[in-house]
Image (cartoon, rainbow, N blue to C red):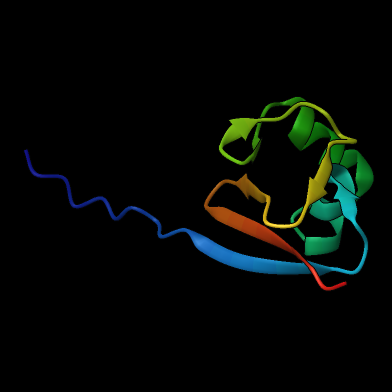
Length: 82
């Protein structure tokens, strides 16, 4: 049996911040991945979000310059514009 399943390519996006860090739940809202804080909380609590390749369950995790936050096929790379 031959499978012709197409593997979705990862969407890589850069998110610029002007502060030292942004909290994980705020980043998910700011980037448009989560439409609300409660949805961001659910995604994080369900283990669907990774920070630098590891599942993260902390909503208040400080995301800093060059950290990569992943959800499904989206990779957000944070850069600090200070």
